[in-house]
Length: 223
Length: 223
Image 1: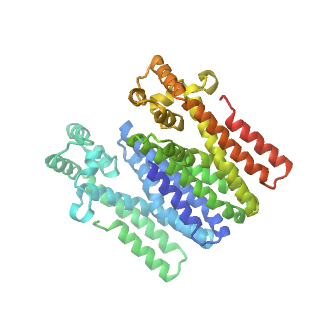
Image 2: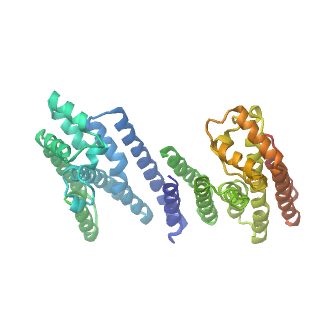
Image 3: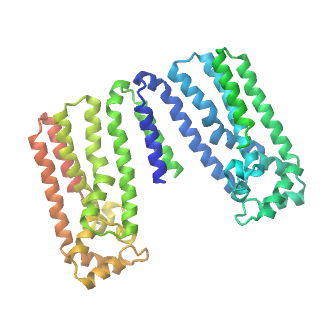
């Protein structure tokens, strides 16, 4: 806890000793503050969702947006834009591109957390399932499964003693329910929305190329 | 934990939306950052000291300085001074006054935590003893007691089930060891050091009167 507090304090200190002019910092500061409030609220929402057992895709998407989507893509772009004094139209385009892309990034993370190769992701296989994370992927399976299989999903999810066979059984339930395919389609749709915003934005060629590359890296990765 | 993070973020936000000019804020910012790092490190030092069982007065004083003395008096004065563009000599006087006074404030807190009237302090009697706080008061008792009574002090300190008779027994041990008197003398000496710095400082009459009043309020209180 104290190390987390220290890291939070030091991130501020880094920002304020970065050499950026105080007037520029003051312009970007509200974005930074809002981002930190959002991610903290998102983390709380995540914990609350595990406790209340809400397994809807709507809730999973909301958690993903606050806990992850905003601070991974949208807010960093808006922060950079504010520092550089970007026009309002460009900031709107960043938000339109960043939020769905951040959500797609999180969905890719959720898929890798269940189906990824531990040798590539660096995370033990099945840990998300043992922790009982209420992801969009899991919520989609919950919505699609019949009563018996749904009860099995709920019973196994969040069991810290889940063995390899249990993890494999949950993978099968999730895949066969159609939730994996539905999540992949959702990632594709969110990414398409982000890219359409990019198409419509007035950007120079280099910025456009970097943001296209970012969309690809965020959603097509295996690590 | 998350509420603490949020409060930390909001304290920043309050500071940056206070209406103070960015250039003034930038001057005061390092004091604010250092204060937050110090108090976090002091809190860690406090936790560590309970775990390692270090019962020296030197360690108790160090914890008090970092965890409490700096952020209660010294840093707030230096922060205000930096905001207002105070000259270096005045900032040195603030530090010379603030650090010992902050330490005296904490020692008064420690005394009230053991001997205070719960009706006035608002804290249950003996809670500091049940929590096993390694204060200067307790460290001074530990240093002064003979082997048998010292063992009794260590055995009872930090016992969450300590009853009223146990609290009273610890009070007697601490008082009879001379530790209460030694702590009161230390409070008096620290306060005298703070006031001597104030005497030597170039201050206007109103500032001097307020700081004298603060020294009195911090060290002679019963609440």
